[in-house]
Image 1 (cartoon, rainbow, N blue to C red):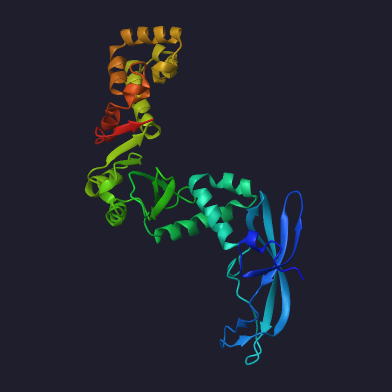
Image 2 (tube, rainbow, N blue to C red; image 1 turned 180 degrees about the horizontal axis):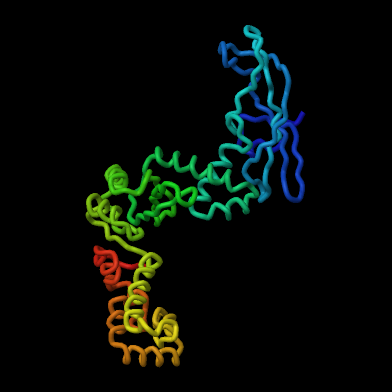
Length: 334
């Protein structure tokens, strides 16, 4: 009997391989547990008497870019003392689980950085399974140890398994591209507790995050030498909103027939992306409407025909300070 054909490749020493079948699209491996007996859940005595066997198909990690299905011949034993039938434990997959534990951990890690639907389609599984794997992985990371190496560039971002539910916060090391922790909720106290317990916290130099006041306060409290950077993706909506307020305040009665409304996309386009004729048109508009020029000057990260990208990163963003009240301190990353 063949019992070691691809055991090393599977990486599951608890299982004995009895047979395998490979097609163009999948691999099926017939396995059973090596343990000769199982403890009775009622009396704890070991028994090797096999009452029956049941075949269960469980999904495992890909092998040679093909999905692997474990066909597990699961033994059911009868306790000699109580006479009750029970199934042997399943440490590879877990009780009543149709996927291996390592496969679920892989799905959770992938879905933290990618959309759940994308991971589900890639692996050929349901979105509900992927969401559950993200929850399991987040719980594991909540109790995981901090990164062993000093972290210089941190990233904070919130996520939710389903839209509208309670959000948690993922904290990652951008230099090494790894998640180093997950904080329950997105309040200042939870983030500050994580930063306080972070080894070599004084070596953090940059914290990338979105415009959340609770995170800013936690960084200012615990990471004294770190500089906060907000990506333009989170800044530009406030810049565009402020510029639209200036534009609609100039032509409130003309609405969609107004000259500024027709040029709203031109006003929001970066200078280096403007065609020569569009640049001339923009200069004419700014000359005719000095209020827009002043608004574009204060909304520098959006471009507005006033500065190239090389200068945008060096200047602080003042428009979010006008719209949100306390963000004149931030730097905007590209």
